[in-house]
Image (cartoon, rainbow, N blue to C red; front, side):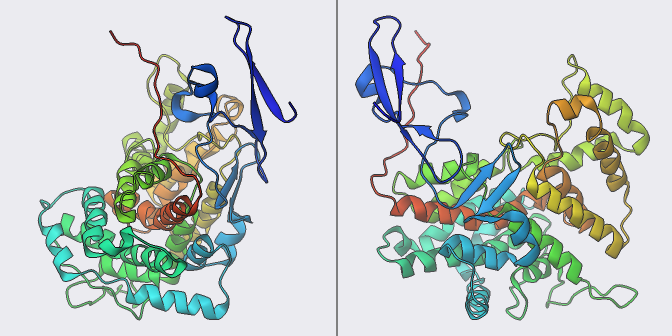
Length: 426
């Protein structure tokens, strides 16, 4: 049988053929959908390291080459030449917008950024001091009660309305979750401000919408800050079938409301091994304390008997430099120059980076700095509270999740996600 893989059961000598399917890029896959029916056995793949769970045309990663593409366009090009909202349009429509389309998309999201007044009561149900991610997940799920009609969609216009609504509202939900966590009053969106600037405004403004003015008279929200955060949103917009995206698709397979699926993705992203990693990076840098202590912690990281591990190095998929990390490294240099930053955490991070990029232990194991290493330092430089690192990840990733949800719902022959197991009990 051509273009197939033959599996031989050594117990019986019986052989089975399974088709090889080829994509446009990346490894081919073996179609084992009939494996159990043919052999009476399951396959075992702990952590799904060798399993393709779906077909997709949204995002492609080549871990060996260190490449990331959205709809066939390299992430470096998008981060340099396009705004985050243009990237959102690209993921939702499979094409970058024209100038007119970009303007209309921007204006639509500005007007959709407001929350229903009754939803505000949900924030008050959480105790002050609650982590914003808990509130964010609950609020995303609660949105399904205000827009229940999104459960049954039958045309592209309805899909686009549903997607644009959640993308527009997520920065507002995140900002409100933060302000409730510190006991501050909510700041409503300002439709005269761009998507990213508006989020910073809702985070920073005083009651009445008044902004702090620096002693030198400069704007309290600088263009470089907006550009930096917009770039971070772009770099987080989608990342193939990671844990949170797989969670969204799995929940989608049950027929649940799209915003409930997004809520599941938020909860999955909160984990320290996933979206919470950049928060852990900063906590570790704070623990190291000073540049003088770096060598000692590097030695601990290389000691096989020590459980200490450097956060922000290595990646499950990338076995070369994370292309998103390259973009952020350049951005970090720009921020240092334009904002005159020279913080203690940046000095510690720079020292660790210098050692790791030249030390045989890290190089041979391909433990390069990843996006979490740089994003945590940059967000700290932007005076973003640590508790908001993962919510910012959520804002950026929402468009990826909802694009994946739409793709799943439009796919023919989809089934409810139902992995099997190797039973070892009594």
